Amino acid sequence: MADLHIALAHYPVIDRTGKIVTSAITSLDLHDLARAARTYGAKAFFVIHPTPDQRAFAARVLEHWRIGHGRQFDSRRREALDLIQIVPAFDDALAAIEALSGMRPLVAFTSARAEGGLPWSAARAMLQQDDGPPLMVLFGTGFGMAPALAERADLTLPPILGAGDYNHLSVRAAAGIILDRLCGR
Image (tube, one colour):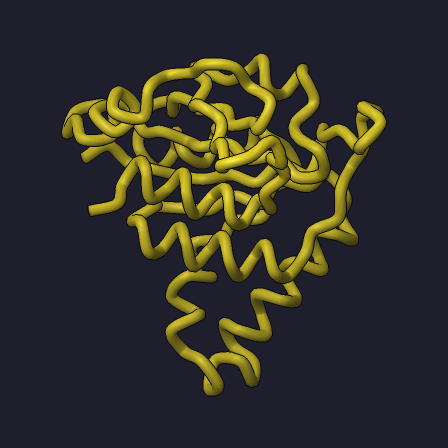
């Protein structure tokens, strides 16, 4: 099976008006995406944020669960949080994956507003190839990734569509669904 990685971009993302912004890191995203990544066999979870103070916040959260009181309270959570790598830019995540696997990963873009995309069965088949390149599934925060970041992806995954016309899942919920479609039993 090809190596799977996930990444959560906080910049460049858009806000509800379409303006390019930097979103804040939330501890819920760190915990829940790390647990989903661990459950579905991802090799790493990259948290991408350009602001040193926000990266320091994420590092403090991780430290609490890796070596602080949280470790004794819930040691299983540490297994998931150990997947997290905090990086300042998208290119740093790419470089880290390339250093781990020896090749540049394919980047899959996700968006509630994307049309079409690579069918789930094809994306799943790509991951099942033993000699295939690693795959990074790139998630955005806020109201989605800025076009400049989305355009750097090699492929687009289909949007998650619910039963009605409301389509605004949290990134945590969307990531869980996407990882299950790609790797679930």
